[in-house]
Image 1 (tube, rainbow, N blue to C red):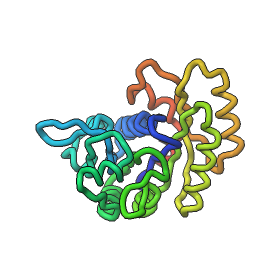
Image 2: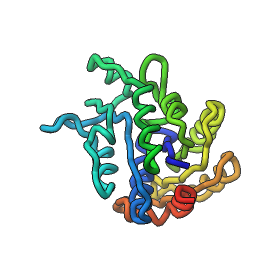
Image 3: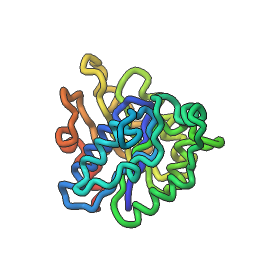
Length: 226
């Protein structure tokens, strides 16, 4: 396996937390690693151009951070559905070019790719994150934010990934609400029903820095470096 495409059940459910934790762990193991967030909607204007906080975090974890555009080739200003923001900006999202960039990276380094939103988020021309992942040629990892509704979202997402012909290597549970007394029961329900193994379980952390998250991704790291 030359990389992993990280998708999720929704937006704001921990994809970046997991991606950053994995990149940190891989680099600590001495694995030649690259990180990409091909499409980022929600970027701040800087003297160097549009910059996304999540992409900057992934970039900062690499021993020799590449130019920003290599990590996030499609940066969009507003935090909204990428195809809507691109249309408002008079741009198109070139899915084929983004997939080619992922494949080129994966030929040289273990490449951690973070998708945008969930599996069916539209990109351009009738194509979506699923099309990008499939064209990239990488297996998928599903991040599930543990909260009310996650069972349905996770099972439907897994079903869609497999139906699209993408290899679902596993999933990671990310707890979102410390007050939810059914967190463990929901994870157990997903263990029984999801057609792939759980490769991590990230609890609610006061400060989910990559170095704090990495110990909860041991099984995912083992899969990545095998």
